[in-house]
Amino acid sequence: MIRGLETGNEGVRPMECEICGAEGAGYIVLVEGAKLTVCHDCSGAGKLLRAPQPVRDPSVQSARAGKVEMEVVDGFGAVIAAARKKMGLPLEVLAERINEKHSFLERVEHEKTLPDEKLAHKLEKELGIKLLQEVSSGTAVNVKDGQGKGMTLGDILEIQQKKKRE
Ligand SMILES: [Zn+2]
Image (tube, rainbow, N blue to C red):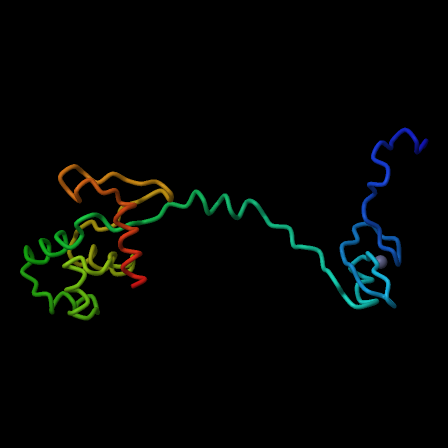
């Protein structure tokens, strides 16, 4: 093999361990005052200054970006209240049935608190209503005209998140 023909990238060799010569050295260690680039096996030879950065798996991030999230529907308080009254269930009884505090449920019904997914599921089951809808992450869903004064679900969520921080 004639070495000269395959170069063109002179000086850009794969990193070799300066102790044993193995390829793929990514560790920098301090040995007797000298910085050496070494392989994993030799990284214990001196004081470790730098270890190779773990390679991030891009597939993990892309899987997350496509995740579908569940959001509570607009006007959820009215939906809950209407279904509860239709069934003739006092708030206290409903709260007991789903194992939640009466005062907390009251706040949810007045839309002062956003039910989490778990609570929403319990209410859906107990009252036979639909409280959760699928929302693709990063997509604002327009609320029907006449409801929510033209606010998008994104606006509402932002307000609710601000409230939470207070
Ligand atoms: Zn080595």
